[in-house]
Length: 73
Image: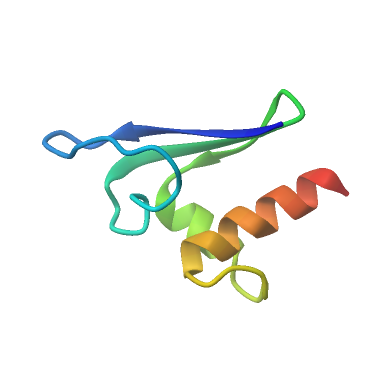
C-alpha cells in the first residue's frame, strides 16, 4: 500500500490526494511505501526528484512517480 501525507500551510484548505500539492498548498510532503517513509521534504524537493523521469503529467507527479519507482526497486 502507498500513502502520503501533507501538512497544510496556514489559511489553505487541506485536500486529499496529490492534486492540491502542485499549487504549493503545503509545507511538507511525506511518501510511504511498504510501511516505510521513502521521502520527506518540500513540494519543491519532490518536484526536483522528478526531473528526467518520464512518468506523470505534472512536475510534482513525476517526482512522486520517481520516488516510488526507486523505492520499489
